Length: 372
Image 1: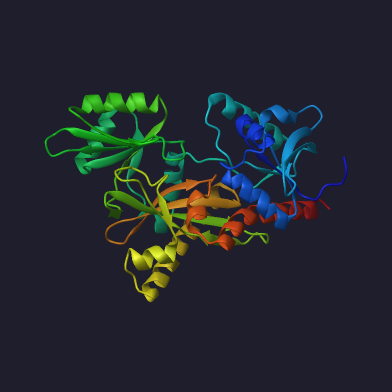
Image 2: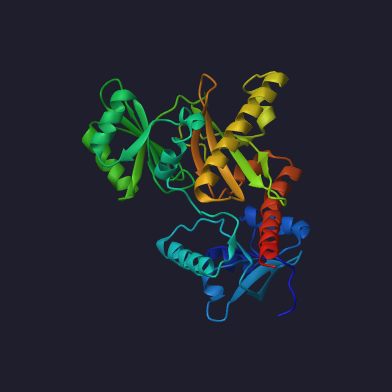
């Protein structure tokens, strides 16, 4: 095998995605296309692979890379750096990916992030230990049964139930107690679903059937800013660059679909534009607010790193209530950068996908220097 540009960076994808790349069908895979484009600048050896292409005995992988024109198959060595950035949706896919993770960990292969996901309850408990962050956390507890729901609804007429491990806004349901004593639940799965039912028992049964025995948390609802019944939040894309330094690459605002309990698959706007045109802030106020948001994002990032180790990138979701207070919503170790790509300029988009590759070079060179 000829000399390859170092580091060798491998990105895991599902068999379906891999096969589509073989067929040159990449239109749906924005992040993959942008990573390949960014690598023209980073100049690593970047390839994508799935479980079926891994030869664990000979430490070889049949991967696919973009040569500037087409997707090309070839054999690669095991990587120097593993980029674990795409979510697997089925039990079998998760099992395969977990096996790859364990093998790579045993071999000491470097990773962009030390964790591939977060337990929302564990993360909540971690952030409550930081006094500066504690007051920005909505009250949260574990959800075990309908009695937890009953107690929470005594303090707040609306709550969110969330899977402790989940992504993309799929495993989230809001429940609201109505003035007439009935209950309204709401979730988003391909479309917004809102229904009213008669009793707490019925709500409890719906929660059980919706989440299918997943571990859950229940959280008080924040009085978030809305536009025409559409929730507003912010996604902070925080990354380390090729020098290992922290950068706030973009902070797009997101406006959810009407009536949805989350902003996922909504519309995105650049930070400054949204502040001026929608929040009606003057230029000076925008600058002050942006600094406040940046400080908050860095504080969350530092707290997470103090517990889990150094991250190459995180997507951090923040809420803004009707009184202008920031709230922590969640951390994402695998940001799809969809909101950023829809709202940012071309240079920022390139930077967002280039930073992880440059960071891969940084951790590879740092590790190589230590060993020599």
